[in-house]
Length: 128
Image (tube, rainbow, N blue to C red; front, side):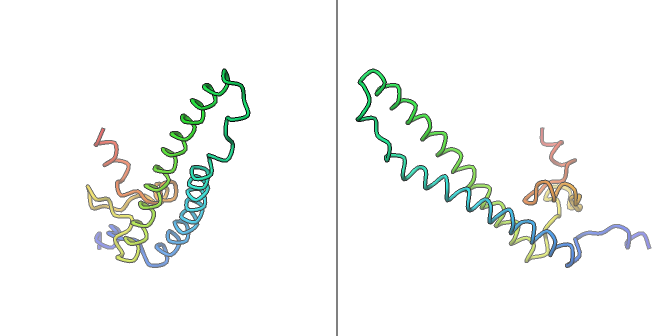
């Protein structure tokens, strides 16, 4: 009966818990992404036309840098959202929480911390 002790997938009730966690994180991530995209599209609102020429160059440089940083954050957020959506698909397929390298269950603690994880801690450490 050792088979009973070695689980190969999470129970439906556990998947519901993870699904709720992922949906919560997805909602927040989408709001953050929308805020970043909005900041990028409305960044032309405060122009440097009313400042002296000396500060205009500095402000334009800072504005470009800020826009680049915001764009990078938006890209990271978009990637995070796609990972969370993929995790929801794995929940629906009942393959969520299974390490793609070892085939063993990823610990609940890891999934609570990184709900879109596809690798166990051991598999992740072996990649380095």
